[in-house]
Length: 148
Image 1 (cartoon, one colour):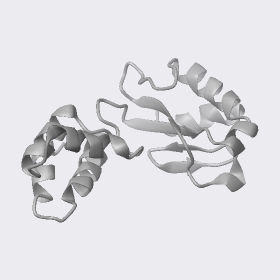
Image 2 (cartoon, rainbow, N blue to C red):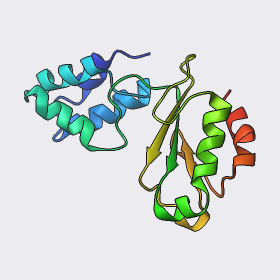
Image 3 (cartoon, rainbow, N blue to C red):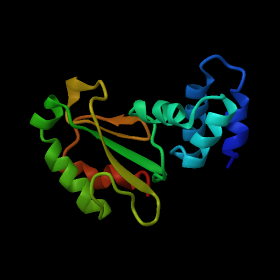
Image 4 (tube, rainbow, N blue to C red):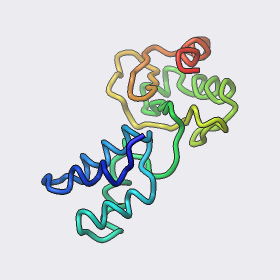
């Protein structure tokens, strides 16, 4: 795994590079370590509060540890009406964790998302940004099996 300092340093001279640096760090780690945010503040010569503001403004970024496989379920109205609550219950049961938590082995994290832009096929979950459409509680075990 590449060191976050090397990754961030690559974007030092890029205009608006902090966002690209955060994307690259998150792609490597599945999240942005808190120390990486502090380091980004130094490299981009901005206050720590601003570096944290950028890292926490975008819902895609996650500061703090996260599982290797990030499962996000859309909680918009179309997905909710289509049965997202049953999918959430199945995910929580299958993984033994609640929304917002990470499995003890560090393999999975459950998160809510506002919308993933797939409203024609609700409910929708994404795993590491890969969308799964028309998800039902009955499909969860087979979907997760791809990642275990």
